[in-house]
Image (tube, rainbow over all chains, first blue to last red; front, side, top):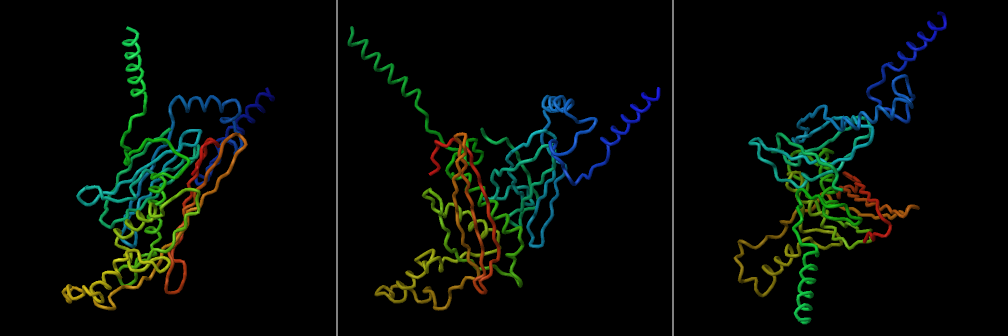
Length: 144
Length: 208
């Protein structure tokens, strides 16, 4: 009875240790941080397989635009990669004027970026014309 | 009969060869899905120029106090790669976007090595003022002396290539695009940036 209680307490302690709050500003890679009760050498392959089957990828959390002190519209996009592998992709930002017309600029090109596994990422862009008031963005896989 | 068969065979084989040869097609330069190449192609210049221009605008250093635009002269852009690159492939885009942003005006009167970007700035003056044809020009339309605007900034840079061989039959080619904007009044570097593009592939592929 006493042994069972000790095992239970140990289990709870390990579980609580695994659930301890991590600083969200710091993203520790899976092979760098310590294993815990939920993520360990036994469960990792299952979790990875589940992630792959469900097709986890990159998600955008928020997009913020503001006009900088020189009058140019700046864009900051924050997102995170839900997958267990780095995802390299291309994005293209197009700038729109007050009538919703695309502003013709040579900076609107497919640019490459990368999101580390299970980590946040950011994309920054600045419109090269003061006439830009809004944006739209496309993404695509890197051509094979 | 044999002659006819032979002629037919030749015709059939030639049709087959024509059918197998790659067709020429226009490149979709807006949404190009083409594979990466070890050399620098237009997509690399597009990417480098886009990032350079955005870095310049974001830096906030090109807003002239009191209004107006900075006058910029194009300095020397060194091609330190194994490829025959016209550095204007990069600079034309950068200059175009900077000019259209309204922050700077490029001068065609002064350039690297005392060579003006447009020789007509001076030759038109020689022709309309000092040549035997000068009388043919309306004096009111001839450029007066002291009209050219001296540059305040100069843009210069370098494109560097480094080749690295790996043990597993692969190679890595690194391209460094370096640009800097210098204040001609005091010689200080106004802005500077480096964009690195890396390519990794078969070591048998020739990167030049």
